[in-house]
Length: 207
Image (cartoon, rainbow, N blue to C red):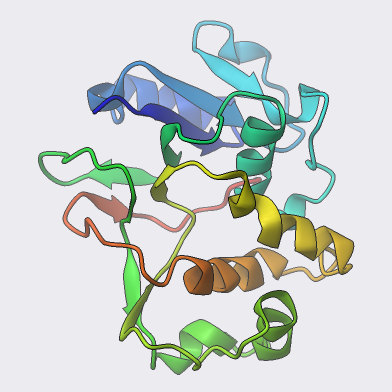
């Protein structure tokens, strides 16, 4: 199965470190998607996209973290409906043989883990505002987490991100976490490939 691989990052030095380590060599050819507003002049030797330079971008909403990269790719024609895409954050480390799939998540938590849903910031009303249902209204025992997915792309996957903007949630400092939990609901039925990666949970836009 052929898939396009996009890796989201915010810092040229981190990219160079990943390249020196060969962290993503098994996914070659892949494309770096640079997020935020740092200087990316040092990226010339690598296949890359600078999200803020694309005609349609939402980089001004940096609190949306890696989801701004999904938006830039889809809205500017890099990925189209039906494409199989690996959407990875830079802080992944492959832990074994990679089984390329068309639709899966890589990390999950039990649905009854209260700190995931609240994080002490009362995310629940905002999650319900986006999705129409509360965090506990599930029929699955686990839900996917992070923005690391392999998807057979559908443009409706942007709907939650766009809703955050339209509903003026983007000013909330941790709206990226709220959006992550909304996507946990969106992809509640997704299968998992949990042996593929470790994740460092580092920043996407350098803050």
